[in-house]
Image (cartoon, rainbow, N blue to C red):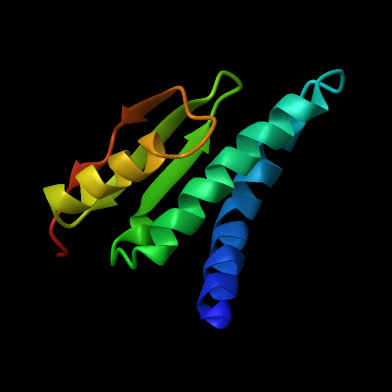
Length: 108
């Protein structure tokens, strides 16, 4: 059980690392705590999604702005997976709103 939790956390951290690096130049040096809290929310959501074993997890993108608004993007195989991702984001501490841009797309 501990291995599954550890693996989920490592997966979430590895998926969020490129996003953190991409936004690193946008961080206001005077407010580093805000950025850390936002990336923490993103990481929590990704870990929860990984624990749900959604098969389209690799295609769902999660980002959080400085006001606690979560932006979901990418695509999922079914509307049920989209709904699960939105519900997961809504049920995460610190999230004030969820903007869903996930598209339902069957594998080609």
